[in-house]
Length: 301
Image (cartoon, rainbow, N blue to C red; front, side, top):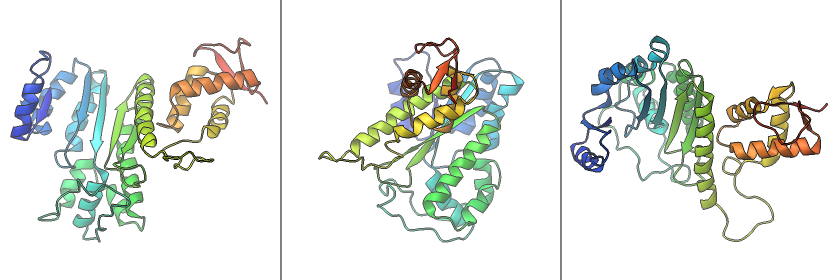
């Protein structure tokens, strides 16, 4: 079910999905079809990809009516949310009658910046978007604009954590050196396998941005920031921490992903564990180096 409110885009969308008999274009807002989605959630697996242009069109309580079927119907529900935190922060500052920082091309993409507000967004509407007034102390704080954007995104993840066991985020930036993302992709699922898949997909996305930031001429040291090129030397101590007691390799990998989401692909974590087994820094319950995810490993004291 593909929902689009803009008439021209809806027509284009309809043409694009004609070749897929299982898909149907719906004209309107996401909220217009929430009852239909909620009905489907009673006996269908549901994957929601919610991609509003800004933050309008989001209403937390309506989405949560679908999320509640994780408990009510015990069905599989996952969400991938395109959340425009910079837009929300600017709207929130306007609603709170606080100073709105000038857009800065050094730290953010100004090409797709929202148009100036004709009237300030209301606090009530913003409360509806994120499911409460918890965002207000974040915006009233003395933190920098990039920090407010990050703290707000973290808050949305915390909200989703009330429904989903596994929640992660990946900032999408226009340029590698930006400190304010264009938006963040926030994913929620109750199954750890989904987190593993999303980690590898988003790590691949991060690598694409890292490649764009690679210097033209070779350098003696890595000059790119660690949020683009994570320091692989950090990985062994993190693995040792999660293998302080005999733990199945698969769970160690999962816990590393939870702690360092989007930094290390699973293949890299698994390879590091194998190397540590060869070096004697880790041991397996079978005594072997080549093991599967069900075999327990533990740190050598």
